[in-house]
Each structure stands twice: as structure tokens, then as C-alpha cells.
Length: 207
View 1: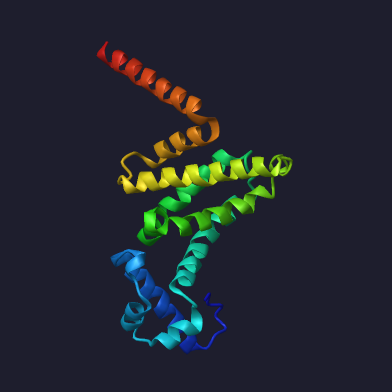
View 2: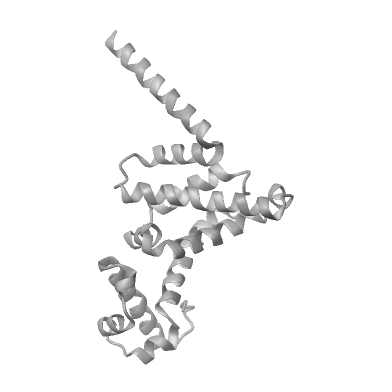
């Protein structure tokens, strides 16, 4: 339940306590291990109070995801897909890199795969409507493009985080954008050019 500020102060405090406790639990353990009972005990409320504001833990998790996605959606609302896919991918990595560890855990954990995709799908839907190119495609063509765009950037981000962000942010943005927008041929060409440049620089330094 989103807090508008017009609620009774006790209601605001209760919702804030539920949400913060949930975030703390997510930091400590996998989502599947969290129970309403454990949340209520830590937040010092009863189950009836929890269910007054949330039907399920899933509802609370989805609410967090929506909040995480709102800032990103604001940044990409004027972009079009697929025309501006490279810029959208860049904004995704830049925005995600500034979020909390809880954001990373929800989006990157295999157990949160379904919810992460919900967020990404919502974000992408925000941009498709701006594209006349997309609207001109047949339904099955739209679905293919949507599936590709939704999953590639997200999976590459997950891999980057799960491997400890072992390459620089700008590097993963460049590599993921190349693969996302120009496919394996473009990706291979980019890597070959980088190898040539490194070899050239090494030879120049040796001289």
C-alpha cells in the first residue's frame, strides 16, 4: 500500500514498519524463506494488521518493484523502442547501478525472476507506444521483438551483478548495447576491434 501522506499517522507508521521490516528480511534471506509470521514478529504487529494492507507477501514485493521502476520509467518515457533501444539500455544500467542491494537481490536472484520480468515488462510497455515502427509490426513480430528486448538487457545485468561487477560500468553498457542492438556479429566485431587496438597500443609502447 503506497503512502499518500493523507493517512492517519498510526497507519503511516504501521505501513512504514511493514515495508522496512520486509526490506530488512530481504537483505538477510531469500524471499521464499520469508513468512508473514516472521515479518509480523519482527515488526511487532499481528497478522490481521498485515492483511489489512496487503493480501500477500507477493503484493508487497510487487509494490517495491513498482517503486523501483518508477524512477527509471521517468527517465525513458520519451524514448521509443526499438529506435532508442541503445539509450534505453544505457539508462537501465545507469539507473540500476545507483539502486540499493535489495533492488539488486530482487532483480538478479533466480527466485525473483518472475517479479523482475514484471518490472521490465512494465517499463518496456511504457516505451512501445511511442514507436510507430513497433505499431506497424504484426502481432507475432511484436511479441518476438518484445521478448528479445525484455530479456537480453535484464539477463546481462543479472550476470554482471552476480559475477561481482567484474568489469567497469561503461564497459558492460557498451558490450550489452552492442549485443542488444546489433547482435552477435556486431558484438564480435567490437571485441575484434578492441583486441586490435590493444595490440596496437602494446606495440607502440614497446617501441
